[in-house]
Length: 349
Ligand code: MRU
Image (cartoon, rainbow, N blue to C red; front, side, top):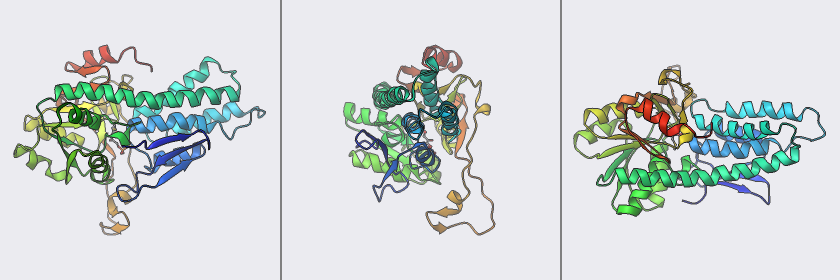
């Protein structure tokens, strides 16, 4: 996969592959300021927890550009912008995590001049981006080792290169399996309503010559009963202290089906997706998105006028349904409360 998040030093802009138009069109979306970045996150130009975090890093830098160092208010204005940025989407903790990293750099030297802050933040945003790719590669190798011998992997949503700085979490494991064992096949749930599985997972795996088969979300139980699924691997938007995991709506049902069929259910996520400040999944804010995403498929209306819909973008999978978490520091098995704490403690917060 080519880089889908690009910062141009010459033009001082962030350019994003617009995921709303994939797989049929490769359109690029230009962010010249922080408002463009917030819009891109809210409107799903860019999505996926780690990718949102990476873009937020560049967003902090872009937020400094239309400020004037002579303006005595610039620090206050910038603080407000950071809050607007971290609130662009509520469930993926990576967004707040990265904004906090940027904030802490500034807090170490609050009197820093605007020009210096710009330089420091842009450097850090690039580092975060490159590090995200390395993290995914490490995580991918750990995952491939424990999945050796499993050939048909079901995944939900898109936890691939497009959902991260590059390479992917769940799909990073698939990429590592492909290069280590050669033989792997992905069953991608289509993931209504935004169709991240059908449009994005299929797009990037097909592009990289990895066998992928798209199925409707409601096929999972039947496929599992027919022994067509060897393991399920998904990404995550937030994993809390006891291991409860928020991920794309439908993940919870999939985990129950996997448990019923005795199929291992793995969650792949970088340590930046763990939020130890929350004790259990009931405290995770779940984003509700526009009903139009459900009532319409692109511009075609499929639900009668006046009918109400629920459009929760995420659900929470209870920890007891998870076989193990795979992060860049290794594989975390139960008991999760103790083991998550051991592995995540010491990560930058
Ligand atoms: O609404 P989205 O597309 O941002 O949701 C994305 C997911 O649920 C992913 O599975 C998750 O962010 C992990 S991405 C590596």
